[in-house]
Length: 486
Image 1 (tube, rainbow, N blue to C red):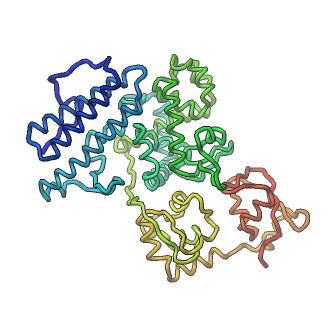
Image 2 (image 1 turned 135 degrees about the vertical axis):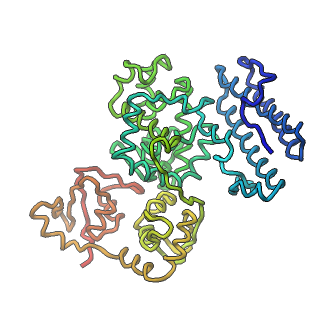
Image 3 (image 1 turned 90 degrees about the vertical axis):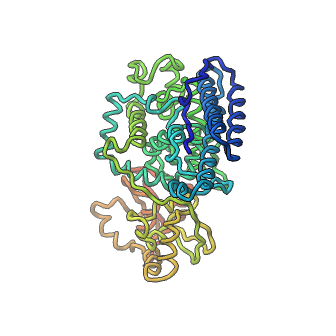
């Protein structure tokens, strides 16, 4: 049975709704619900035709609302999203009832949270189109493939290709926490991926030199403004869902200010709302206009086209020879049978189910847990099903499980480092039994603590550093207690 889902399905009966009041979206949504219910009860061709007309009327009402000043775009697009989900459920149910053969054609996945199975988004054309919309406009049409964006495409496709692929892998395992937030807000998934790829590369604990943190890189003051707290010592910028909610709130604010201008909203995200607002005069100028573009810092001029280019590649990988590997990212949990750290689990799980290993995925999905701190038995950890299988196969017992414990307990003797102090080492003796260490590029507090045989907590306490990110900077001199083992 064919169901026509597009707004262009019926020429007859078209009417100009450019001035349609916003309540017509609600009326059209209710009419669609009634038509869908009638069709789902086993309707005939007449019921199918009425469903098509109701869906067309809903699309038209939404488009008219979005074209009017004062329209509640978020509510309109949520109505469309709900209709799409209902259509998914109906299609699966009808096909299941019709024949087993039709069932085989739909790769059904569970679960919508209500116990109802739905078809994958990409199998329903209207849904695939809707997830690429930005405030009612196709993202393909919003994006301007100018020279700056093309140059950014080349960067992603050459020396940054590994970064792009890494970001995509990390995002796939985090998608169940992030994408529903964008979907509910009516924002395109490609934009979310583009920002994740550029901001953090998909690393939950990413922290910039300026102090921005998390997958979508919020500064502390902005994070607090959008409701990200530091309750119980945990910085919510490291929570994938919470930072995505803050990101959506920020972007929607900018879309309202800049009349849904994508480039200006991204520029404000990176370069500051006040600065971009003054340069653009609200939405009187575009990001690419010389008085705006040339007055922005180089970082922002580079940031905007890089995000757009990553979003474009997310939409059109085949056009540029990009192959994004597919992963079984089905969420799962395990209950630790024995005390273990994230590091130990990454060692014993190895590359079982993932040729790249599981360390980053475990860190991303369990952001409150320090990688080198042993977690009590009985603790529940989040991970993909494939990783849970790896845990069962490798970490409950056996040689790899034993070796992971041995490696975790290993410490580099401090004495072995002492001969280097007199030559080129950045470490030197300090007062009262401590030493000092000059932080070099690429070093983390965890690595420095382990080098000296210390726990990260003791080094952090000696330098007044706070969990969980323990921010240090290149050139900083740290006090290191004499806690190494003989």
